[in-house]
Image 1 (cartoon, helix red, strand yellow):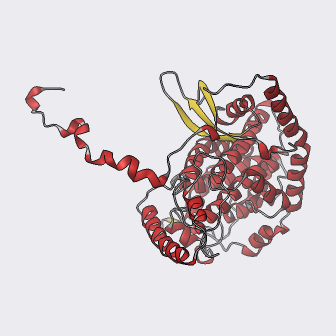
Image 2 (tube, rainbow over the protein chains, first blue to last red):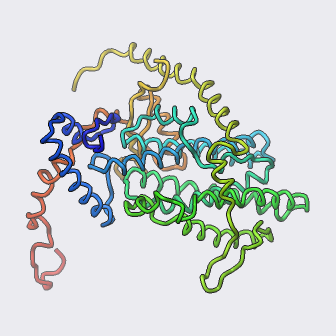
Image 3 (tube, one colour):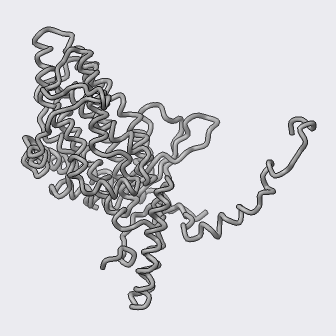
Amino acid sequence: MPNGLIQEQKYGRNPDHDISHERFVNVGVNCGIYIELMANAVDLTTTFDSYVAAENRVEPKQWMPEKYRKTLVRQISQHAHSEVVGMLPEANWITRAPSLRAKLILIAKVQDEGGHGLYLYSAAETLGTSRETMVGDLLSGKAKYSSIFNYPSLTWADVGVIGWLVDGAAIANQVMLCRTSYGPYSRAMVRICKEESFHQRQGYEIVMKLARGTSDQKAMVQDALNRWWWPSIMMFGPTDDNSPNSEQSMKWRIKRKSNDQLRQEFIDKTVVHAEFLDLSIPDEDLKWNDSRQSYDYGEINWDEFYRVIQGDGPCNRQRLIARNKAHDEGRWVREAATAFAAKQAAKKPAKQAP
Amino acid sequence: MSDTSNWPLWEVFVRSKNGLAHKHAGSLHAPDADMALKNARDVYTRRSEGVSLWVVPSEAITASSPDEKDLLFTPADDKVYRHPTFYDIPDEVGHM
């Protein structure tokens, strides 16, 4: 059916549960009513478009075009998956962190990423998709996550560079999303941004220590920068003229800045960070452009980008195996929690209605 | 009961300090209230964000519908006399 209004939605048990859709379902698909509903939907869409264009926020119970809902579910769940998979390359280094201080910090950071995943899954759930469905899609490989996490973290310097570049790029995107038009997504982003800035700074601190260390340490951090630079600037996605969904997302105020705009801002900031430590960015074409007041940069290898997204990156298989293993090995914990709750409930005398 | 699919959704409210009201912070799934509270502590107060937590089963909340928005909230719009600024009090009267 072309119209999402009539399609029955299975909503979560959230108090922001939308009843207006069910009402449409209940009227039955009588032809006359259907035509009336179509006309109504066109009106609703126009009203919705001007509502978001006027910088109003959308909340879960409100009517929204089906495509807006779908776009958000896809984007928010991908974002959540990225937080969850993002724990893997860093968790590799918890046991090998060079000091107790570094270990504590890294554990806290990885724990944050788990929390960020939860905020985002919760936001996506308000749109009527269950947590199990989203997690299932990640585990089966159906859902995508940020391609950056399909690169390996080979040395301790990588942990620093991931915080500096990867979290830095994520922050650029997330700061923009604090003002996204969907209320629950925007609130999750505000919370995430508050925590994320620690991630970038701790990463830069590691980079700084190595860059000011022995020549071996400096070489190690330069090597990490060489490997992570290009994948990091790919994180902003395809160029604007190759990003077909961007325009509608901008119109709906889901996104507030284009991929190229965000990428440029990130590069301009990051070059300063690298220069401060006398590290060189692995791009021969990187040059200050006085007329644009920005850095020009070289051609991005988009073949690599699409190859990694399609599943052929250095670690795609490994990440999914690790994620599935963690999920399977955690099953007994979930089962024990469920069993314990049932036992406790059976012990308690039945509560009387107030 | 093999997995988490029957775990209810809980809404989490955090009081950031005594003297302030509990404010909605987000939601999470948990098998019971105790676990919900423990999870809320781990997820929503890792940086001293609160001194007190509430967890409420989402199902227990009755929410107004957007369809009723006009019915419920617009009658207030034409009752400007409920606001102090509606009344013209001469400056000479001083602070009131």
